[in-house]
Amino acid sequence: MAKTLNFIIGSNHFSLSPVKVERKKLYGWTEMHVLTPEGELCSSAGLNSDGVTLIPMGATKSGMMTESGLWMERNELVAVDSSGHEVPQIPSSFDGDIVLSDKVSVDDLMDCNVTAVYQLYDPECADLADLIGDDIYRFKFSYRGGVECSDAYLLAKDNAIFILTGLKGDYEFIGLDQEAVIDDADGELVEDLDFDMM
Image (cartoon, rainbow, N blue to C red; front, side, top):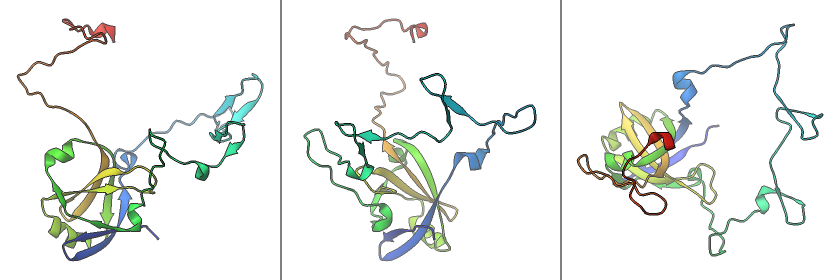
């Protein structure tokens, strides 16, 4: 059964299932298949540093080791901040209620570096879309829980509801008529920017 997000807006409660909007579902994709002269499908493999051993695709795995060289399971790791204090765990957004109360502007949404888009599917979407109207609601979103969460923006269009997740970008708009000053690493003004230097 699909996971559901529980939204509260005013006195109304909605439980809706998000489905990730995949770029390849929108635009399609291509795949290249390499065949042997006999028509059999080839598969990728890596060559070990000994120059002899072939490592088939999927046969390697990254992991973490203790200082004494022992394997560490991921659940043994503890995230700490720059002061060495343990970072509190954030629950998954699927485990609680999401209260929609923080209305934001289109400019706030445009400042977000969107990393994922979800569409909500349910017969109740039309009712929630009516309540949202032209507003945009912001909330904190964490798919699996952990130590990090994203900014999420909920908006409706033609009875379809979308969640856009990402992180706010720190951009400063200096204006259309104002020139920006570019400094080099030493703090000296660069008068002519030569794109061949990049």
